[in-house]
Length: 463
Ligand code: PHE
Image 1: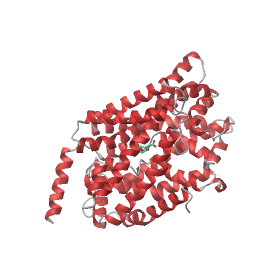
Image 2: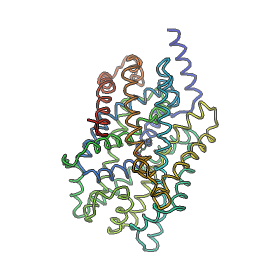
Image 3: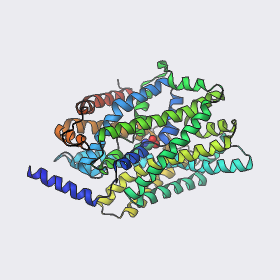
C-alpha cells in the first residue's frame, strides 16, 4: 500500500514537471497526427495497387482492427502508466526485467530507419508543391521525367530532405504542447477538407467506378504470404505501432483521456483517411486507363498526369501536394519525438539540442536512402535491396511486427491485470466502469500475439 502510494506520488510529481498534451482533444489530434501520413497517401495506395486491390485492403482492415488496435491500446497504457520515454517505460514496467527496454531501443532504431526514407519522400512532396505552382504559371506539365530527375538526382532531393528535417526538428524543439499539439490540432481538419475535395473531383470522372471496384472487390487469388505480412506491416506503420511512438504519446496523455475510445477513434479516422486517399487515386487511375501497379512512384507519376487531364487540374495538383505535405508533418514529429524524449529524460539534454542531434542522425542515414534512388548509390544492394528499400523493409516488415509482438506479450502476460484495468478505467467518473475491458484484454493477451506470430512465420515462408 505504502509503495503504491509512493509510486503514485512519484507519478503525480513527474506528470507535473513533464511537458505533455494539455487536453484530451489535443491528445487525440496528436495521436491521429502521428498515424496519418505518407502511409495513407503514398504507401497504402501503392501497396494496394501492387498487391492486387480489394483482397489486400480487406486483410489490411482486418489487421488494423484485430491486431493493431489492441496494440495501440497496450502502448498507450504502458506510456501513461509509466509516464516515461519509450526506452525507460519498457525498461521499468516489469520489476527486475530491464531487458524489456530492448523494445524501446528497437524503436529508437526504427525511428531512424523510417525517417531515413520518410524524409526523402516527404522532400519529394514539398518539392512537388513548388513544381506544381511553377507548372501552373508556365503552362508546363509534371510528368515521369519530372519525378525521375527529382528522385534520381543528387543535390535537389538532398536539399529538400534537409529542409524537411530542419522544419520538423525546429517544431519538436519548441515542445510537446506548444509544438506537436498546436500544429497537429490546426492541420488535421484542413487535411480532411482538402482530401474530400480531391475525392469529389476523382469520383465524378467518367469511368471512375472501376477504381472503386478495384479498391473494394476482393480477389483472393492475388494474395500471397508475403502480401499478408506486408498488410500487417502496413497496419503497424500506419498506426505508428511497435516502436514506442504511441507509448511516448501515451506518456503525454492526461488522465482524462479514455484510452480505448481514443485509440478506436484514431484507428477509425486513420482508416477513413486511407480509404479517402484510395478513393481519390484509384478512380482517377482507372478513368484515365493508367496502371494501378505503378509502385512507389504512383503518387508522383500518376497523380499530376491524371490531374493535368482534368478541368482545374493544376489547382488540384497544388492542393493535393499541400495536403500530402501536411500529412507528413504530424507523422515525422512523432518519429523524431521517440529519440528526443529519451535524450531529454536520460541524458538531461536540452530539448532543442536533442532535436537537432536526432535530426543529424536521421539525415546521415537519410543521405544513403536518398542517394540510393539515383546513380550514386543505386547499385549498392544489401539483401538484394537498395538502402531506401532496405530501411523500409527492416522497419515495416521486421522491426515493427516483432516490436508489436513483444509489446502484446509483455502487456498480456507480464503486467498485472488489475493495473491494466485501472489504467483503462481512467477518464470515467467514479463508479462508472466501461464494459469492454475484458474483451480488449483477450485481444491483447491471446488474439494479437498469435495472429502476429503466424503472419511473421508465414511472411518469411516458414509455415
Ligand atoms: N503512421 C505514419 C504514416 O502513416 C508513419 C509512422 C510510422 C509514424 C511509425 C510514426 C511511427 O505515415
